[in-house]
Image 1: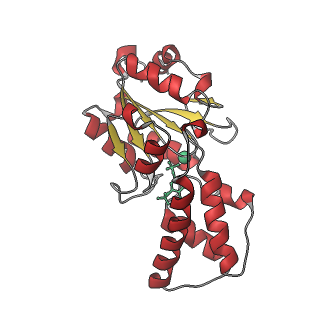
Image 2 (image 1 turned 90 degrees about the vertical axis):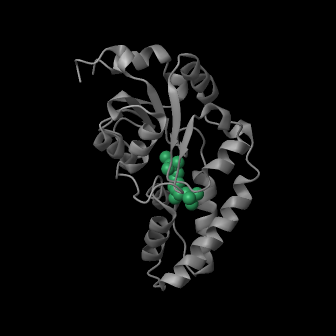
Length: 224
Ligand code: B16
Ligand code: MG
């Protein structure tokens, strides 16, 4: 949108896992324990496919990998069991687990007057933000407890914009998952991919982590 002035970007929406913290290892350990209990295993490479998707979708994929069939009631019990193990692990997280550049970037973004919201699929985001001392940066937290449609549906980011009181075109989304970049694009937002350019091909800009981006460079986004 070339006719936007730099000032038109007013809000930053951050995904949680893979952008601000790396909880993927805890998800992997808990899902793997569940799979092992059911008599099969899966790899760390397969675990990549679970990033950014919801708990129920993750379970369905894992059961498919193990060729295990379960009823809805059994699936609910399995998801609850995995979450119990996962919550026990993230309850011990510390601020040291925040990804490089995160605190400095959030501090700079806030000081520059941008509104900040979380846009995560996780239903455990409040606990993670609390454990890592990041809660105070967020004006709004939109997570798996507030949305009914998973990324790549744009619901999570559109809800974030609406709660912040800004237009979708005034938002920048920070995402590590392909489905998350697609969700942001469908919402009509600017996107900064966190990860590899060859994977996050649809993002406006891709950086390795938040230490590689400055508030000044955000302004250049409005010219794209
Ligand atoms: P929970 P994000 C996502 O977080 C994770 O990437 C994904 O692996 C997980 O299945 C999902 O949250 C749900 O998490 O079981 O805690 O509700 O990347 O959207 O911040
Ligand atoms: Mg993520």
